[in-house]
Length: 213
Image (cartoon, rainbow, N blue to C red; front, side, top):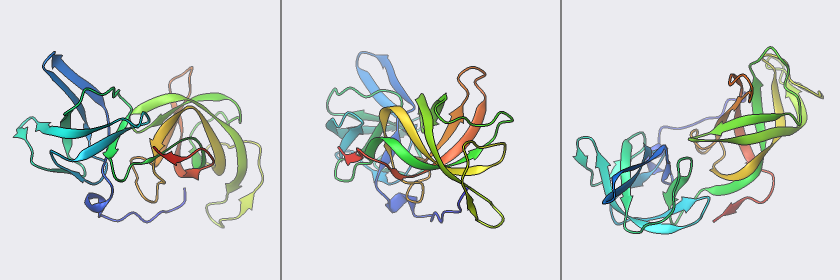
């Protein structure tokens, strides 16, 4: 895959929290748990949940060692909100003023990792962040020779080949290009029958219907 420079300044980037699970041990507590992908957040900050676009404010940042006054990139937290809004595993909580984009179609770079060749149009499972959903590669634009960077037309990708493709998902996801955010810009491809990981990829950009909700 193309080498993309990624700095160590994730804490200064927009806040993104992919929701790993919804923590509701009783009727009095409802939190959203995950690891901060980038940015910084504190109680009182306004947030937006994607892909729904619903908004609220941070009430608490809960950890095993107690509440935090601030959380930043790579920290595992449970966030509670001031409003009861619908957020599920696989959603992304963003800073309200700088939400991620949302789309269901992308140009991507894929490294194929299976003995059986990739077939355009075949349904796969795509795991992006904490969300897994059906998708397919509907077009291979070209494959890339990793030694010469030559681009070659092809109808499929074999083991260890890299290609630039169009990826279509069954639903929209919150994303960022890989060059801007590794967590929101990468994914793996899973065979629906064997459950094996057969490929990995990077999002370059949305093809259409991308929007900041």
